[in-house]
Image 1 (tube, rainbow, N blue to C red):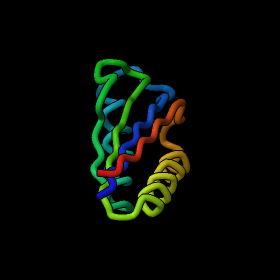
Image 2: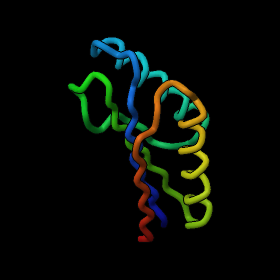
Image 3: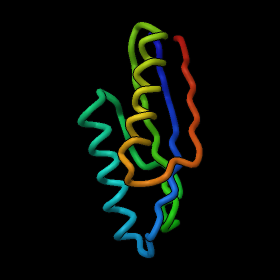
Image 4: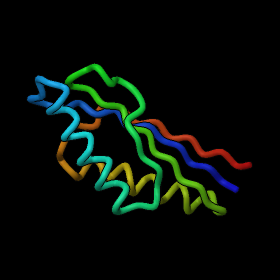
Length: 95
């Protein structure tokens, strides 16, 4: 079994309230969930207006496949254009 976990840190421009941030984060999370079979959630920076940290996780049997899917997921999140990605982290664990 292979577990791929990643973290995306976004900068949300022109965001001056938690309500505005929540709408952007919910849109990003929903679109990633709809296009990829992945677990997605906001995992940090909950009280910071212009910054969001979203965690993603995938499980499978092939290391290369999980790596490819997570790379495509990261590219998809960047191509959405809802927020700027300022940092990414990816870890793949074989169990």
